Length: 421
Image (cartoon, rainbow, N blue to C red):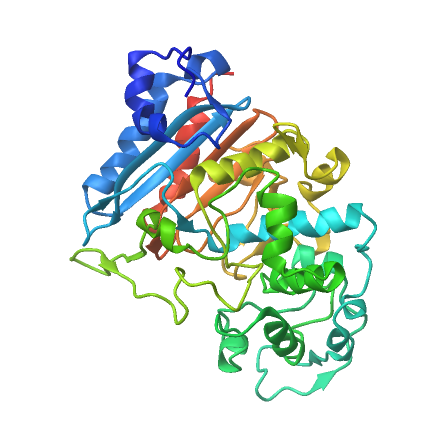
């Protein structure tokens, strides 16, 4: 932090851990009121988050808020690892799961901008087996359903929008067929996906899916680079996101936040065992849907680049026009509302290229503005950016189930209430 930076005593108490953050985060700290944020209301936010930690409901967390490109709140609290007594840090590393999707989508759009991929291109242009896919006649009973040819081929845009007919890695359809394994490389995953019939004709329904992982393979085919190498060169390094990747290397393991299971009744949090290929091991599978790790400072930079129209610190990663395309709804009215399940529709939002996008603020459970975009992860990470208020907010924790205590909703509401104009 520059020595000339002066902050009030209250802000110092709120942001004390930020003073140890390494210099790669160039978003500068500002007193909240200087960018239209209430310090008093941020203290309420801080109290609410800390109460969840102090009560033992979550092991620990990191939260960050930036407005007009200035960080007004960055706080770590609780524990990365309860058993080891490792405290949470501002730069603690989290499995962000589905918050990987926007990173993959940005990479795809870079290749669209370069003319190397077309949104209307059939996926089979890059992965021939996608030209041979079938569709279940009765997707509700796939084990007994006949199949038929799809009405049209799935396209790159279909995959960006989750309307290509693919299923999700955690759904029984893919799990029973052992489609996904972190021990198998991306090309194997994609061929296994292509071997399973579609849940419906492309363009006919929104199904949250493994589509972004297929797009990661498309990037490899088009560029001749491994997916992680492309992301490092074209997204992560230009945006100075050094702690974002597909695993936690040995020299950073001391910053890894562990995953905890919420008890069903009385009892304490219990640590969840590692995956078959632990997150501390460079995995064969570079999964563009849910495979990455990151930090709050890194992801603040990622979303700030979107609010800046595709640029940050003099580095442009995408044109402003395509940033606008990524952050607007592309789901037609006939397919709305979207939702993880039909029983839980997300009434206020549509879907852009990798993000939800608020399209009807009146239908939200808490204060939002039309045009807000963001997404979350299945272990409790949560993010959004609001072009209207020029605000970015990130919450990261590692908990299962991810929606326990509705913490992300409380966080969202209190951040919104802290804005003064």
